[in-house]
Image 1 (cartoon, one colour):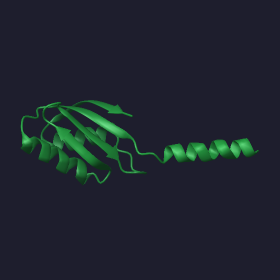
Image 2 (cartoon, rainbow, N blue to C red):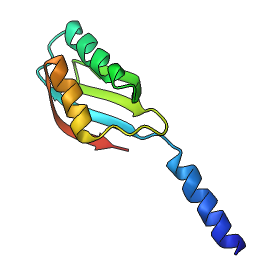
Image 3 (spheres, helix red, strand yellow):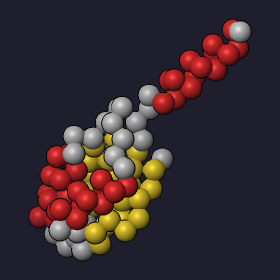
Length: 91
């Protein structure tokens, strides 16, 4: 019984970690692109520590604890900014 309690506590603590997300983005060319994508991801209220790189053509962020962004939500936010999310990685 004690082992099952430990396993349950471990599973609960692991689910508390926020996912790190990286998105390949097509169409970015300048600092305004960075601002637009950052604004739209922030507006979801589910992303924090947002870092957008024109050089790497990527957007990176951490999901707010307890708030998961679906792939569709990520793609919609980036599309609203005027760009295309082509691949999404979760860690």
